[in-house]
Image (cartoon, rainbow, N blue to C red; front, side):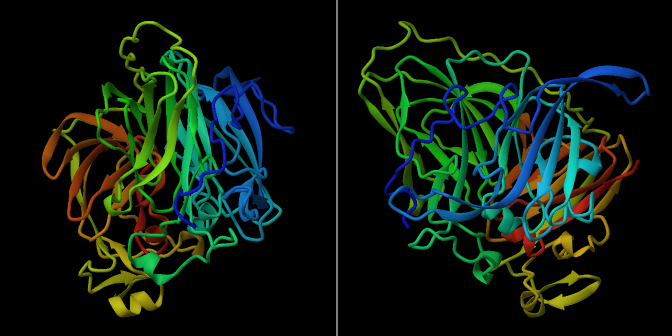
Length: 494
């Protein structure tokens, strides 16, 4: 199936018409906005809002490719791909009961959310897997406002690749005023001609760029057009749930304002003609003013892989006149999230080097305490390493030793070197970090992220305060790279 030659579904997912489920309106069996008495860390009673949700993983069939094709067999939360949108306000708590209806263990990782270690969802590192028929209850506070998402960390290349993911939206107390808010969860699928999902785990995917699909979807459907009205201002929340595809979106005829990265605010700036790059696991928030004339159309193009650029969708203006006579002022900067800023002059520095893959020059690595040649590693499905150590899937029950151990409250600067021929979006659990430099050049304005894309033969410096105790996974979010060795964990002492 071609990436998006024929689009057959309306992918609008806004707060008035979409399939997203907000905090006031959830599916049967879930109750939102319950005031409860809780104990804060000092032991004092506090009244707070707890939003409760029920999620169930199970096989399902959904119409990904459209009416001209059979339905696709997937894994889904509550029968939906993407899963229900969980929406709460900053400072509220979530209590999510996850029942496993699969025939294999699973977990839920709350990507980008700073929470207590037992709630992080990494099998055999932070919790046992949720077995078939079992239920696990996650509970945590939404400390940071922004766009986040959730997905399994057990057999994740397959489970995420089959559709187990959903968005978590934490509303700001003072959001950017817009006419409409829209969520696009981006994904790609490798489908056969009969719309079935092609098998996972081939060595080319593991050792090269990961599992790049042939069918791109927005909110679980092959997109056609996106209807807009002249003069309206839209907040567009973008989530990249793909196993490996990096999106580079060009909004032709428009200059979106970039307002947040990975949930954290940035000084609003227009994206004039360039591509909005969203790596696997990352999120981007845009504010887009629809400034064209009634009846005009403009392509949204994914041009990250230049030789394989394609039209993702198309802005289609209705015939009605603009809803306002004058252009709006630039959007205001959102309030900062309560992320500690490290003192760079006192932070300890560490180097980490990511190696391996085809054309990477890695001759071998240590696996479970044994030094193996690249050939022997490949026979075991291992192609990547961090600092010379290849870590197998943690669901095998052996996470090995931490990549490094940090004192609680200490500042750290990590230099992440990509010594390979492929992109790597590196994700750190449990913390948000400041990207402070690229290739030795300090950023004029460091940005706060939890997933940073590192191109081949480049390096970045990220800084953070190790203020969240526990064992925190660090890995490439190209899930085939994670599966075949490019992962580990950082220990923050209690």
